[in-house]
Length: 301
Image 1 (cartoon, rainbow, N blue to C red):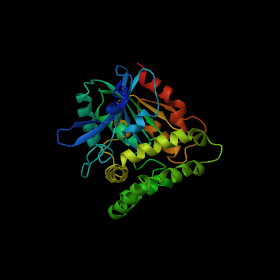
Image 2: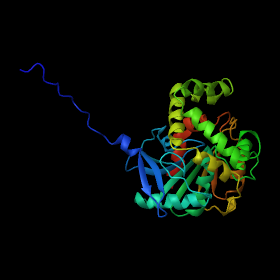
Image 3: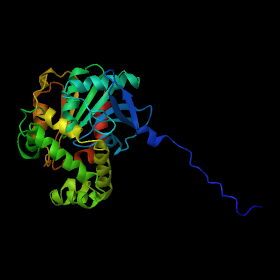
């Protein structure tokens, strides 16, 4: 026996899990759109639109039995190419092409936080294919009560200032992608109200997933979140009363990031909606504590 012969290594069989999170499709205009697949391949298909900044990886934070979560990078985020001067109405066209690529005739949609306006746009423009839509602690149209104050108002203000937007975006990307970001990122938990549902939800594991998602979203540049900031402040090309798709609205009364008044605005004007405003739930806890109920709503006949 040759004692000097190299010991053969047992290679793990690839299960495709990483590859499923690094998918792209080339759209008709030549742009690449990045997406990730999580969960059951034959489960309920749910397109998940991430928050701000975020990325497609956010769709994999929660394992929901019987559902296939499809996280999608908006233009300029993660694996998606930027889309110059994009508008809210452009997004449903991108999702329609992705659905065709995945051979999905019907599907559900979730819009979380900054993904809310994009989910609402799909509820309107993709009526018939997007069979149900859930808006979770979502930003709303610029005229909604609460969109001009607090942190949301600051974001919209940045979006209206191109030079400021570019500078702040570059600073944000530098900080988040710095190897030392973990130290500072965990301070986020200290900034939420003490003994709140959000403080409970923001475990070290959750914060690490959030940081990884932010880093992935900013992998190439800050063009994605900065173009989002501009889009959030622009008038919508439809009214909430125009939406015919059934919509579930989930917004905690304890949300200090996106005011619950925005969720109530959705509930007031969307004709076919089911609204839930859990007492004391925050911006993060609304989804960590209610994701299975949210998916259950999307399954409803």
